[in-house]
Length: 59
Image 1 (cartoon, rainbow, N blue to C red):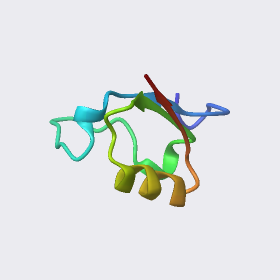
Image 2 (image 1 turned 180 degrees about the vertical axis):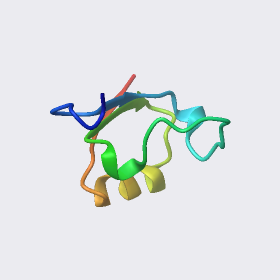
Image 3 (image 1 turned 120 degrees about the vertical axis):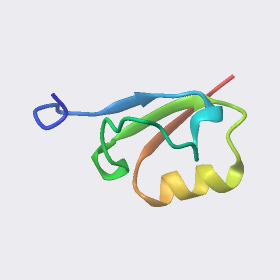
């Protein structure tokens, strides 16, 4: 589904960044947009935006 999608949007809460999981859905270079909460660090915001990924931080 990701390969045929026009846009890949990931909805994730800030506590999930930097964690390892038992499964992988896709790599970061396949993501177009990330939506997360406002507890994300400023450093991580910078890293995501520097990869050219759109980022929405919600309250």
